[in-house]
Length: 367
Image (cartoon, rainbow, N blue to C red; front, side, top):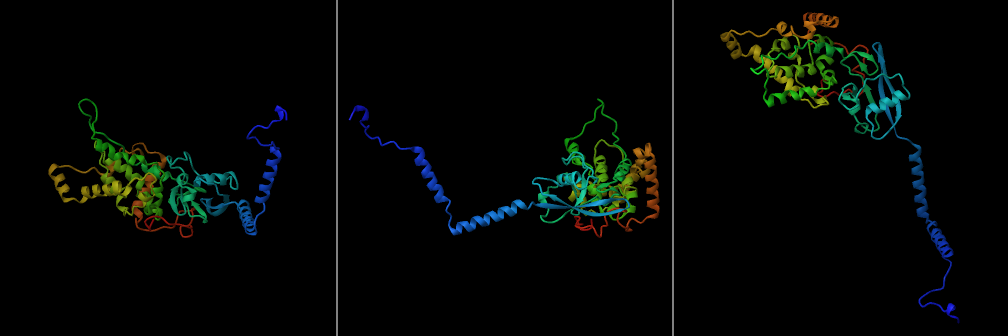
């Protein structure tokens, strides 16, 4: 044997690796593809389930109130379910698809403008902050306009009542500045009003308040929770010199509130409207009108309370009234003289009937 033919120690005859691997792979593949009857049945079962899942798309039913001041009704829209959406997203998809004429009000989609307020499953909420996965699965999502206000169209309501009442609030009236021309406040006084300034004016507290929700005639003589936190912000300000207590008692209807805390429960900014605004205002009004010690003090010091007319004289609605302000004042006089605050009226004209609207489950029981 020549040196070229001498085998090297430890070496083995060369074989065709491709052929061996191919045959090995083929054998292993063949072994693995020979299922047992049990495995075959399991595979068939999984295949059927997967086919059913892929063929059936999850859907959600949006039951939206459609109508105008003359009337309307709820209409169902079946929409594909999309993970991570909020109610406003689905409403926008309804607008882009089966109902392009659906009217709803929205702006920031971040829970800071208060525009997209509606009643979702009977509870006032912001559509942009209500996640679909937080609502009961398998049930229709019922969306209705805020029932305390007149209907404009579909989910859009006329909330101008709130702006009319805001124009009747006497503005901030600071006293004389200090010798250096500045004003000084304690930090605790600064922080007291910060809570009330978080209000985004979604008016859900106004909507849920049964004083005006169930008694339309009270709007002429009742400011509502949103305005009461503004009054408290001004009344608790250490530099303010105006006295609005008689105005609250005689014209703004602070006594009509029976502190059920409905407004506090629906506030998206978690403002403690009842505890930190309405109850302190009630205490101030009672002290100024019925406290015998305060009455004796005023007599001795020869001081008089500022009347409701004097307090309201500086309000925009009285200082420079518009035609709307004049109409509101006429309605307030007529309402105060001819309407009993406790009388009940029917639901909002044109809005969803409270007796038939599904899911009407307002906090506090009475609204």
